[in-house]
Length: 461
Image (cartoon, rainbow, N blue to C red; front, side, top):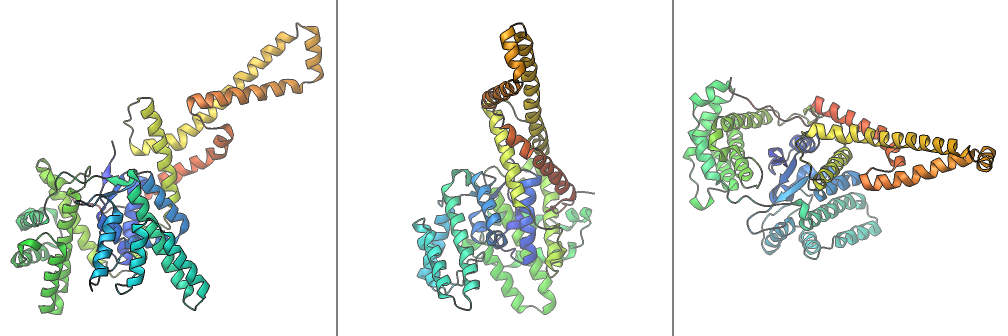
């Protein structure tokens, strides 16, 4: 059964350099170390600033596309909007018809670049990203002082449009919405009910700040029609900030964190197949532990917001090609077992070990044993031919005949068995044997060191 997850680190409002790095690490860990299927929302995809470094690199961009194709990353539907392309088109149309400050927060585009926004809209409407490619060619021909910078920017947009079109067309990248989701205001009211006595046993260092923040949020007045909109709560908090003294900034920032926690629980509950503890009354204590952990993680990030990106817990560049290769191998392995109606209960690390260690070695041993058996058969034939003087004399004159027979038999039998048992070609096995073993070593090292390590959730002491 697939383990679907929704990554809070990819929330569109978490767009600082540090937070974007944490989002990439969280995605990397979920896909490679945990073997999960990551489900995104349209909003996360539209405002994916964390994605920019991946789009800048052609190889990493290809890996990202492949992860969507194989269904490792999916996008959840939103209300009557079934594709990411339609979601973004409607946003673009609204921006073009009005004087709104609509901005692709995930893309380097200003709200007043109406011609470029129209070009993106046309490319999405007609499934023709080459419209932007032609724009890139025109910039190259101009050869102006800023042409290199502009070409880089347009290339990001071009790849982004290609990604949106792919996600919208590939069924494997689809994830249905849940039958129903919990309204934001309900989760907010639940947070209001969490008191000091419930939090004291967790020994958190933000208890007093939490009490003050929640009490103040409870006094805020939001129109009923807007109570489920995060942006409206943000606006109200900013109104309060304008009236505050400078020392109240910490309170307002923490209030936004609490709003983000409630918002992400709402989004999580709207995604089919993703476990949301809030919606499970029998898991009340687990939800409480998780809720405290989420707030604590946000509070830690709030304290570290101004630290440079190098202070995150990543250990160098993230190799997305390794993610694609391992997931493709595991996916093929699962499909073969499904074809043979074999039940699959192995955990993800074991599946990785099977595909990167056991299967390559097994396949190599398969050909090795077959070679020995063919050699034995040919030797038996040779011994039998000694009874026939003419054949024996002919074969003794040209010992290469035996080697030729062995090679032909090995090739023919090997091809037939390879087809019947879905074993790769011997040359392919030999060339990839040590590569696969190295993949397993890298996987174990990454898992051990915790690349993209998740925030530890506090538990009841």
